[in-house]
Length: 606
Image (cartoon, rainbow, N blue to C red; front, side, top):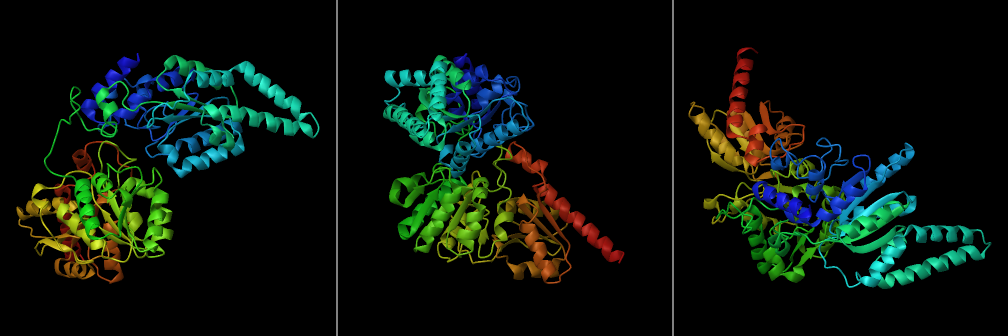
């Protein structure tokens, strides 16, 4: 059965892309969970959720699995409205224990009877939120099971015959009944009883800690069991079956191997963590483009800058490869700081560095930077510290869906005092903006998309002037002001409109903050119509900034903002999503023509 599941997942992900290595690593663990617990009555929360493919297969979604991560198909993460077996939607790390404790509290308040299980990896456990939840579990003493899946380390020497024997002993019902009876009897002995209980507990922990690394969790108030071989299905069923019958907070530690059963993924779990479609026999991507990605351009440029300026350091939250910092890590090992899944810490760490004269660059995905909003406000912007945020995956990211689209950053960053916010339209501008950022003495955010740049743009060297936009096309029949890569769609809209005899000015904004106020005000007066476009939510975004400027200056100029409406965007190919949400040249051209029509009507009918 395990081989069949692995083969099915490999074949599917080879066609659709997805999180392969992590799902292959939890096949036996997932089977054991579904064998022992009654889903959906019992609640299992998968931290992050990229390891939930086996769970989806075992809960009635095999026939739809070929639609994985596709538009209208099943999600690559647990999703509450997809199945009753997905009891909690995930996509970001370190949330499972908090959610599980919340469900356990609700269960007890409602006098219901079901089990709650949180499955969390060692990477996710590095997030502070997970420790906050563990601390609270130990305080509340709720009946909850935490499964810690270590998949980045080999099974330690302590997982041998003696350790296995000890763990079997500790999980035996007879042993636990004796322990509970012993505690009860000692508690009845005046004065001496509590001291004896404490001595017995210390003796048990002393023996156990010689063999298993559970002292930390025991001190937090969770009974610790493990580590166990996470690929030994009979052992998992036997052990977890015994622990299931216990009460109170418990933690089972299992050790698995990412990519288990697919040698190519075992050898390179990083690439197969979030793989694009690939050939099963070779593991090579099906589509290989000679054009570099924005992440690669960032990585190359930050290395160039670091060679020139020793103050530059790079910070990542467990996303060194994904953000393009691989070469920086090799060349400037002592100047790279990987904080694990701890974005809040990453931002305040950067602020501390900036206080002492360094130029920290925080490389992070847009969706993950949301987690550190308070730190950006208080620790960076309030103190006006020169921290540079290299925000990857800004805008639509495609098949990973709503938990990973970077559609809110322009809105949640532009209203912060002291923040300078840029959005390049190509690789050349990204290089220039990074060079500009290290010269500035205030917080800077550079927001760029996932994907490849246009080939002809890679070799250009530009000088970026603070707060100045770029005019790409000239015309007096209206203005299109585009943010970031939407400039390409704006130029295409120019050509569509030109065929109808409508000549417009197209502007690449470059800066969301500060705006090029002089240019925008001139365009409003000269053309009388403005369309803004951005790959961001419209509420509070770039278009809002333009409208606010015109309102503040008392200029009555019709403005239409092209962007994402007040909704979460589902998964799908980026081109499909742009079409669905109107982020296209055709939609821009249509919006400008509609604005012209309404403006003409208002002039004729004052």
